[in-house]
Length: 190
Image (cartoon, rainbow, N blue to C red; front, side, top):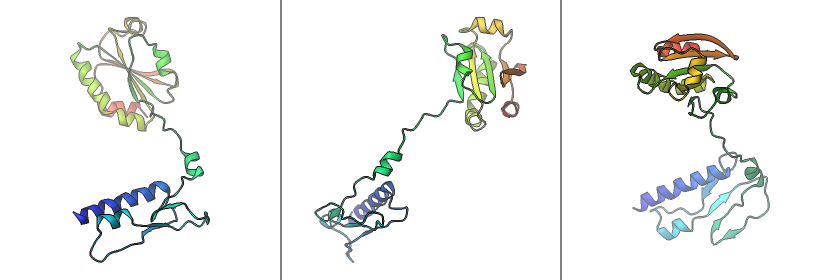
């Protein structure tokens, strides 16, 4: 149990040192070592030394543990992570296709489908399998349910399902009725 506690404590110190920047040119070492292992009091009172050349001032300490104040540079450089842009979207019933694709910068593949259509479900599975590939190629796949968007299906003359359309630079460059293979879909994303 003592060995496990020491390993857990050491792992915690390593993670802490990586988070506060010790891995980038500074070092953290345990000041107390025991040839027979550590008891819980020694583990809790182990001293962590920091070799920080840029901050020669003494660091505040409590007991035998040295605490490091967060660097303003580190805090200032942190940014809020932005959610990744989805590469496959289902066009909601009340949404406009133009709004959904307005921010797309690469190839757009439109999949016109219906829930009751067997081949459409198979095509949808293939498209979902290619979602990460679309993200890598900066392509957008938009699934359009014709039962929710009958006017759009009529406007684009979709008469059979599934129907796939490829749009590049705002221009329709390919149209296919019936299922498309993974290979074809990847080629269309180029």
